[in-house]
Structures are given as structure tokens and as C-alpha cells.
Length: 245
Length: 248
Image 1 (spheres, rainbow over the protein chains, first blue to last red):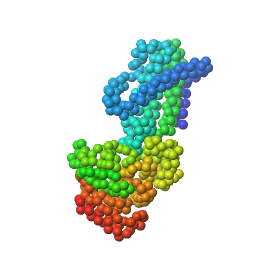
Image 2: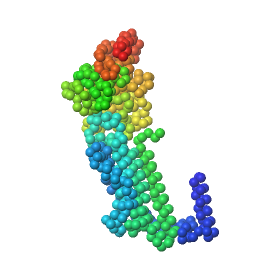
Image 3: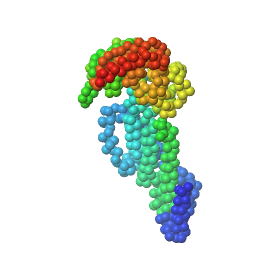
Image 4: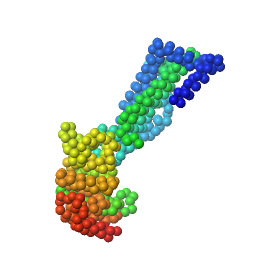
């Protein structure tokens, strides 16, 4: 309720300032103009097309990140040797922001098509997923492992019935963080290395000084990011076997 | 069935040995208790027999074969419940059967039987988080018994329960033992519990732990809670208590 009040006050003041002529509409168009921009871009399917292009890249990157990070995380957590080989590599690569990979991605994959952006979302999604899977599997209680071993569990059962379900709450949290991170980074990648997507849309409209469309794109990015996060939080609650206390 | 010969354990970095030349034998079908004060190395002993920990010296034979690593013929029930929190009661009890390769329908039937035996009928689909401490320990007992092990090792299985729940579960463990005829090796610090349940009690001395004496408990079977009020029971309890105190 209070949130709605503050939203209305800010929007009202913004609109009022626009009507009073205090704002340069090229720098900060009033809400009505942004609304108009929404109507125009949505009507032609332009907004939806860009949004879907961005989403597609995020999901593709996330998919490949899952494919690589989940097995690697389990492996690194369960084998001291693999951990020894992987850890320094991961710790060196991790501090490099995914955005910093963009120039390299452009060189490797070009600006046309999805591959450069897919690569960036992969890099963004990989690390949180890997680290959460790793610590999830590492945190399996010795008690559970002993019980499973004494009951005669094979390696396959140890992995599928004990390690993974026990780590699942961690993995889903990692998935949520990866998704959010990939979403932020895909916009960055599209600003530079793409010819479609919401990032491209706000950049191209900036160059044409179409500020209302820029802000319309920004708001869409925010709303989609918010919805994705909420969706996974639902999933998190559903799959969290830890007693909620 | 289980033959422990001069088993000692010295943990790396530990000043004293956790276990000093423990020797005893558990017979097939017997209820055997190891009684001793906390910190005398009882848990170490169980872990060695279970195969989780290697002895520094000495030997443990199980059915004539040396123990190397855990095995479903020697299932352990721990003090803290260690149920799989992400599985229902039924799935927990079925776990060992699944590991054994028992087909699903058969698993379900056997699990149901043991869940019934520990009086948890109706809780098959419940998750451990929603059960009380006593109920969790019952599930752990059912899970251990369901795989039809050669013997069950119990490490203070009732240690974390209140005294009323303890007494109820003592009766249930006794009933399970009488029904399944399993060999049970239980470790406890509770004298009354040891006397009530056991055929024989091994007394363990304080750190470094070794077996100082083995006492026959010749109370008639089947036993009920009423046996605790008999003079024979009280006499045995007093005897054991004096021996343990005298040891300190």
C-alpha cells in the first residue's frame, strides 16, 4: 500500500514537471510519453520480439551453463583431485566480470546472430551455478553419507538419491542467482554485440534520441527480471526440504 | 558372530588412545550392551565395528571375516537421527532395500511391515521434519531392520530422548529384537537400559577405554517394564553401578 502511494507521488511529480515544461523531453520524457512508447512498440510486436530475443539468449546460456556447471560442481565436490585441478582455474576466472568478455566474444563470434550474447550469458550463469552445486554437495552431512554407505548404497544411489537431492536447495538458489546475473549481462552484451534484444533496442533508440523508447525498454528489462526472480523463489520454496524455521 | 580382539584406536593428534585393547565376542541372536561413561570410546568402538573407522591395531571379525568398510550386514542406528530429510518415511525405510535391488512392489510391502512394527502406520508419506524425536528414531530402527542385516549396531540410540520416550522405545527395541531375532550390539551409558535389554553387558572403563568385565544378565525373558521393579533387577543394577563407579 505504502509502495503504491510513493509510486503515485513520484509519477505525479514527474508528470507535473513535464507539463510545467521543466523537463527536457529528449532527456527525461514524462510518463505519458513512455506509456505512448509502450503502446507503439507493443502494437507492432517490436517490444515482444526484442524481449523474446533476450530471453532466448539467457535461457540458452543458462542451459549450457547447467550442462557444464552441474557435473563439474558435483565432481569437484566429491573428488579431492578434481578439486585440486579446478579450484585455481575457477578462482582466477571468477573475478573477471562477464561483461569484460564481450570484446573477446565479438572477436570470436561476431555481432550478428546470438552466439556472442549466448556466450556471455553462459559465462555469467556458470559461476554461481558451479559454486552453489559445489558447496551443496560439499555440505552433505557425514551422518547421511555414513547411513547411506552402511545401507549398502552404490555410487549411483549415493549421487542420485543422496548427494543431489540433499544439495538441491543450494542448486536452485544457484540457479536463481545465475538467471538474474545472466539477465543483467545479456543486456550488456546486446548493447555492444547484437542486432536484436532489449539491450540493442535501448541502444539503437538512444542513438536516435528516442528517449521514451529507451525508458520503455529499461522498464521491460526490470519487469521481466523481477518476474523471473519471483518465479524461481516459488520453485525454491517448493523444493526446499529444509524445515522452514 | 562379532569377535573383537585387542582393538585399539589412536586418533592422529590425540594424546591418549581412544580405545585400548578392547576384546569381546557377541554371539548370534544375542542382545549385547557395551556400558560405559561418556568419553570412554564407545562410539569409536561402534564406528570400528561398522567399518567407518579403521582400528590402529587389533582385529574385528564378522562371521569369521575381517571387517573392512561399511556393509549392509552391520547397520548402525545413531544417537542423532540421520534420516534422509528429503525423503518420506516410506522412502527412508525403503532405501536399503532399493540398494539391495529389491523390486519396488516388494520394497513397499516390506517397508510397510516394518513401519507397522514401529507403530508408525499412517505416517508413510510424512517427512522427517514433521516427526518428533522418538518417531524419527523409530523410523531409523525400521530402516535398519528392513534390510534384514546380520546384526544391528546401536550407538546410544535413545540418548537424545526424554526419559518417558526412552522407556517406550526400550520396549519397542525389545519387541523388534524378539520378533526379528537379530543380533544387536548396543552402546549406552544408561545402566538401567543395559540391564533391561541385554543378555550380556560389557563394562567399559574410562579413557582410554577397554572392556573391564562382561556380566551375564540372567533375568527371564520375555521381559516387560514390570521387571524393573523386581529385586533381581535392582540388585543387578546396583552391582553394575558399583563396578562402574569403582572404576573411576
